[in-house]
Image 1 (cartoon, rainbow, N blue to C red):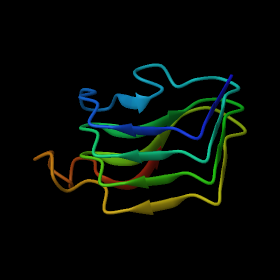
Image 2 (image 1 turned 30 degrees about the horizontal axis):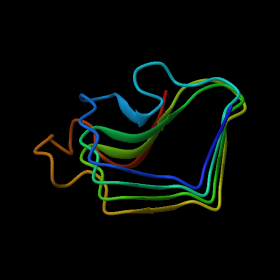
Image 3 (image 1 turned 180 degrees about the vertical axis):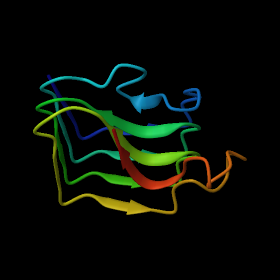
Length: 100
């Protein structure tokens, strides 16, 4: 599956859930050239064999990117100002990206 050229914003995903990828990181997806902004939880979750290419991921409440699995490619993305507005404790989990 490919998700390309979209603006994904203001999705109220719970903590540790993604606006793209929701609660189960997608396997084998290509997520490319999207703007992902102003979502409550994580902007994008990635799973095994997922490619995150050229996305602008900014101003998400918990984190910009999260993922778990093998062979995840993160290339050419811009991550900015994630982990600030939601009230989630940034010392618990917050910021640009996290992987498991």
